[in-house]
Length: 475
Ligand code: ATR
Picture 1 (cartoon, rainbow, N blue to C red):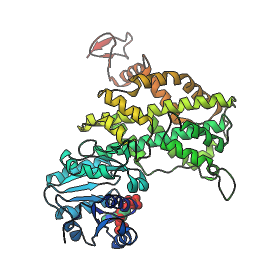
Picture 2 (tube, protein in one colour):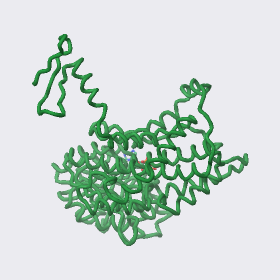
Picture 3 (tube, protein in one colour):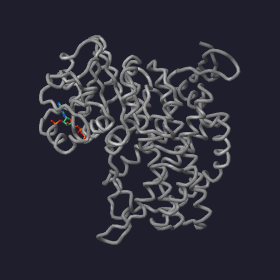
Picture 4 (cartoon, protein in one colour):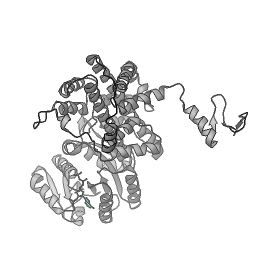
């Protein structure tokens, strides 16, 4: 077979098929392969006219169709299938060839696979592809890991097919080995927090201010013309304005209120625990989905009383906007901090401004304020938090009283706002002059002789709690 293909894609379910079409529509010759050949045939029949495809039924034919160094992209179900496909293709490849995993792999798996394949002379590139099936076809946001050498060969292809914002491609090399899949995972964690915050804002406007779903849709539409401008706020307005054709009721009222998840939010929280990264808004958003599915618990709690009603709808609405914005800044800041913590732990050199840059288009959390996040990180490469940047600091300062009033109103009324409250608590925790962690240290020393440090002297100390005089010794 003539080795003419710039890239090969194996795994032609929705994501793989759409990425293959995207490459072909941009003039690349794309070899296509699937475990079950009928999918390859369907792709050729339905979309073969969109560009130059080289269909292959066998692994050997597929590999033979690729130009060298070979670029072989895997788009199969993450997990065991990815390992199976790597085991099938790696023996057919040569030194310097590349396997790209564009699936939703766990970054730890990507690190393992990269190390294994590096020993065999093959570049393994874990690439986080965001934007769902539409993004895959029309331009996703692509977070690429693996070696710099591999990106030098692949990068321009990804940049060509990615989304573009203001002429800039939403694809970059974020760091080595598993960094791409890690950043994609945190992206999804932030997405969970953003969606939950928007959902809480809706619930408050409905339950506390008394607006109808359609009215709240209008409020979101207005907010989407300001600093909250984002894809998620835009689609929320659409969903809220929708009336169920069968019943004539607001669509949100006919949808079961148990939220699903595919697991990337959970991964973010699990990894955050390993890294001691306090991504509390993401964690609360993940737990909120879990709680929504606890049918038996909800039945047990439902008869218990709620709180009191609080009027003044209009003033409250503007307070909710402030609270949503402030909480959102915190949630994004937590995600960026977690990426920084991981970069330190796993030896990645991640440019946070570039990450914010590629999230501006193609992906679910695309939002106007990512421009400002990018600028803040570009202006200060050691930026510890967005809240130290003067613009964000000013906005949070203005928002903090309404933010507190909204959370207080939610508590008084009995509307659950786990992500709003977690964001505000995070702000207050990190802002506090003194934390009760000092008391925790006292407790730990009391029961476990874990020792403590003092504010006035260097060294570790232990108090002999069992002794009537409670003498202190320096360890
Ligand atoms: P989607 O893009 O729709 O989310 P997915 O569930 O992530 O799809 O992945 C499905 C793809 O993985 C299919 O191409 C499937 O191949 P088949 O069409 O033959 O079922 C592929 N896949 C799953 N397990 C596989 C395995 N062990 N080896 C090879 N391909 C596999």
